[in-house]
Image (tube, rainbow, N blue to C red; front, side):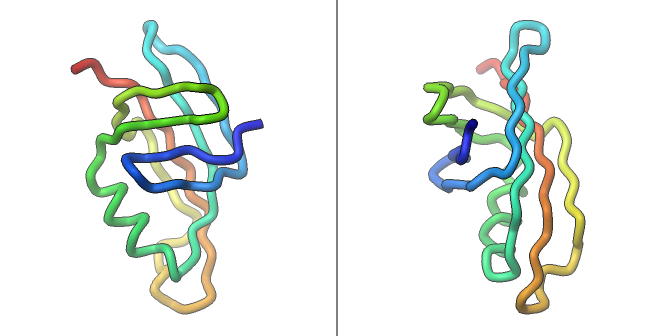
Length: 94
């Protein structure tokens, strides 16, 4: 089971991971927790929209953009909060 992915240079520990192909392009879907302490860094990263995606445990690397994104909580500015993020990344061609 995949335990982490890397978006650009940020390591993200994942709770769930799924990989598939869509029109011969990689599509990965992950679920991960974000704490109020990590919220700013994750939000700033995700606003970029497109990333160098690495899945070290599968020796997978590609350039990917956000295909779908959701979160269980919108106010992680309150200390001690944890939100569950769902993120799908689709490979983009250069």
